[in-house]
Length: 327
Ligand SMILES: Cc1cc2nc3c(=O)[nH]c(=O)nc-3n(C[C@H](O)[C@H](O)[C@H](O)COP(=O)(O)OP(=O)(O)OC[C@H]3O[C@@H](n4cnc5c(N)ncnc54)[C@H](O)[C@@H]3O)c2cc1C
Image (cartoon, rainbow, N blue to C red; front, side, top):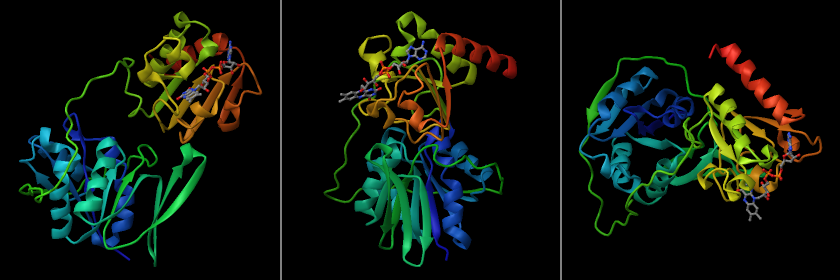
């Protein structure tokens, strides 16, 4: 069974964001012989469109006249829907970022699509598409059957590997923006304020996260976590005990009332593993816990556990990683 799939590319520093590239394997699998097309918006979208071709997508629709400012999901959705219709696509895929989640919401209305967000697996059978995703903070997984002609999915960041490069000759077709219909309502972004984070990658984007907890005992010890993170090129996170105590800003907090992360590798240093922390990181691909208490709940979700004193283990680990990486 095959159908055409349209992948909406989000841009990051001129190129297609990794979260968009991660959906390509699924797009090719669902499309079969139907083929995959890309979509990008914005004045500087051409290099991004070209980067689709590096990953095996030969045809990209470029809505040049949608300015970056207008590139909010609600403004883009009518054009995405029109392109999807014009190429006979049955499925639109996007990375599960804030933008991607918003976009599929708008496509539910504008394109009459069945939607799912936070998707970690998609399968097709005779009854249609089935999307799996974690629910209740990762304590259960649901499978949804998506009915109807149109399906729009936002795939969970880092739940799928970035595909290897497979260059094909690329073609870019410029498309005119489609104006929203009368009565169209959208939520407008009034401004974006950067929140303080560590100097490495941001928590949401990082493929490795190293988080520290109260086991570090004092703010002046938190550098141990930051040095381990720097040695791995990782983002720095924290438990709420750390952010509530003011050791690090609230933007570092991972968990129920902080950020949900799902990196390839999550290292929890001196974190007990309270359920409110677990729900924010349990869908990480590999979890490593360092804790002196062998009965700490974090070990129940850890793939690898190191029972011992973090003040000995973390500096030794950082030194070893620096040695191996030659940094
Ligand atoms: C409504 C609500 C929402 C919440 N939201 C969040 C949230 O979003 N995120 C979050 O993290 N928490 C959240 N919490 C708080 C949560 O319940 C825990 O209190 C918090 O996660 C504990 O942080 P911790 O693991 O750093 O500290 P602790 O629970 O105090 O654990 C410290 C750990 O360090 C270990 N340790 C101590 N010394 C060493 C050493 N030398 N070497 C190695 N290990 C050592 C200890 O064995 C212990 O396991 C929330 C709570 C509530 C009620």
